[in-house]
Amino acid sequence: MVFIHNDFMLKNEAAKHLYHNFAKDLPIIDYHCHLSPEEIATDKQFKNITELWLAGDHYKWRALRASGIDEYYITGDASDKDKFLKWAEVVPQTLGNPLYHWTHLELKKYFGIEDLLGPETAEMIWEKANTLLSQSDYSTKNLIKRSNVILINTTDDPTDDLKYHKQLQTDGFDVTVLPTFRPDKGVEINKPTFLPFVELLEEVTNKTISDYDTFITALLERVAYFHDIGGRLADHGLGEVPYAEYTEEAVDVVFKKALANEEVSSFEEEQFKTAVINRLAQAYTARGWVMQIHFGAIRNNNTKMYDKLGPDSGFDSINDQANIAAKLNGLLNSCEVTGHLPKTILYNLNPIYNDIVGTTMQNFQTEAGIKGKIQFGSGWWFNDTRYGMERQLKSLSEAGLLMHFVGMLTDSRSFISYSRHEYFRRILCNLVGEWIEAGEVPNDDTLVQPLIENICYYNAKRYFNL
Image (cartoon, rainbow, N blue to C red; front, side, top):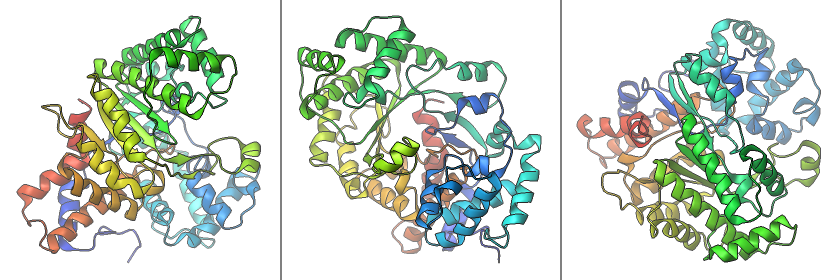
C-alpha cells in the first residue's frame, strides 16, 4: 500500500465516513497566511521545486540544521538542485515529525508522486516535479485554484501601498485575495524597527508625527485605507500578551521618550501596547473587522545566526509568560468595557496555556447573534501537528463550543501548503470518530455532519461575512 492512501490518519470507520462524506471536498478559506500578493498578482511560475518548496520554509531549514547539513545548502549559495538533494537526504530522518507527512501529502496532491522521498528517489522526483512546474497550470494562481481555495487573506504592513491587491481586484482572478492589517512594528515600541516605522508612516500619510495623538491618527488613516481596498482583518503578533492600566497623557509621555531615543521601561511599554491595541480595536469594531492575536513566540534567539541571516530564519521558539491569564483577560476586558471588543481570534503558541485561553474566551461571549465571537484559533506554528491540533481541539471543546470553531488556516508562505487543511480535516475527523467509537458522541449524521462541515468551512464563511 502507498504511504499516503485514501484513509491516511483515519483510524476507524466513523472517521472514514466523516472525512470522505463531509470534510474532504469542502472549499478552503485561508484567512491567515503569508503568501506574497506580488507572486499571486504576477502569476509567478516557479523555476523548480526548490524555489517553490524550500525557499523561506523555516520548518525544513530547522530539520536540515538538526541533521548537520551545512548552511551553504540551506540558505547559502548552493545550487537549487543541490539544496533539493540535501532535503531528500534528510526527509527519511524526519520520521515522527509532521514534516514527513506534509512532504508526502504535498508530493501526492500537487505532483501525483506516491514514491517516498529519499536519496534513491530524489533524482526522479526532481525531474518529474520540475517538468510539471514548467507547465502553465502550475503557476501561483493555478496552484491556488487547484487547491479549492475561495479566499486568501495575506499579511501586510500598514505602510504598504497594496498595489498588488488592487491589481488582483481588477485582473479577473476568481479567488478573492484581501489584505490583513499587521501593525506589529507600530506596537513594539522598544524594538529597533519602531522609529523607522514611524518615519515611513509619516511619509505614506504625509503627516508630521510628533506625539501619540498624531501617531494614532496616522495609524488609523491606514486602517481606513486597508478597509477601502477590502481589508476586513487585522493581526497582532505578540511575544507576550500586554496589559497595563494607562492614561492618554502617560502614553503620550512614553511615545515622546521613544521618539527621543530615551529608555522606555517594561511597564511603560505595556502601557503603550495596551493603549495602541485598544485604539485599533475601536477602529476594527467600527468597521466590522476581525482582530487576530498571535502570541507566545520568542524570536531570533541565535544572535550569531541573526547577525548572519537576519530575522525569520528559523531560530524562534515557544515563549512563556508570567500572569498570562490576568494579562489576556485584562486586555480583552479593557476593550469590552468601552464597547469596542471586535470579533477576536486568539492563537496560543504555548500549549500549557490552552485551557487558560479556552476559559478566557468564554468570559467575553456577550454579543447576541454572534456564535463564537471570541475564538480559540487553530494549532499554530509549532502546534500545527497532530498532537498540537488535538490538544487545541480538546481544550476548545471542553471549555467552549467546538461547533462554532472557525477551523484551520495555513499560516504559510508556500503555495502548496494547502495540504495542511487536508491534514487538519483528517485529524479532526479521526478525533470525532474516536469519540463516536467510544460512545461519547452519538453516531448520528444529523449531529456530526454539521459539526464537521461547520469547522471545515461554514463557520469561517459566516464569521468573516463572506
